Picture 1 (cartoon, rainbow, N blue to C red):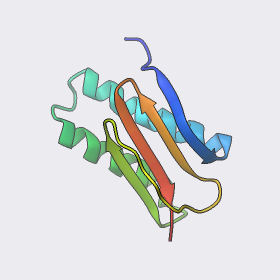
Picture 2 (tube, rainbow, N blue to C red):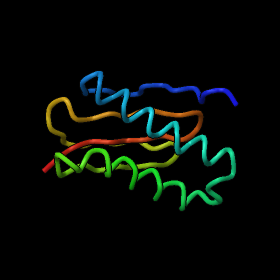
Picture 3 (spheres, helix red, strand yellow):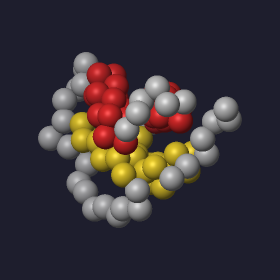
Picture 4 (cartoon, one colour):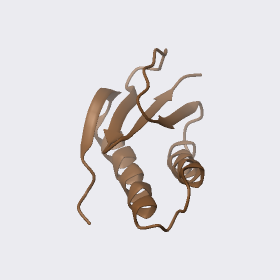
Amino acid sequence: MEDPKCDILYEHMHYEKKTKLIRIAKEIYENINNNKINSWRCATIALRDKIKENLDFNEKGWHIIIGQKFGFFCTHEIYNALHFKLDHIEFLIFKHG
């Protein structure tokens, strides 16, 4: 299976952190497509938990929104926001608080 197309819609994040988040999202996305995760709700929970597991270890205050066709306005800490799309699924990850 080929990698899902990744479009960065908004980024204000260091390169290393951005690539790590996108890699994690792609792993979960591939599990959805390979039917290892059988529902959209289970997939979003798995993705959220995996991202938080990697981010919250050192830092608290991360927020994750997963969906399709949404807009947003948020306040975030400097270099801690990323909005990207894998095929048709959008991810908004930002830190505030």
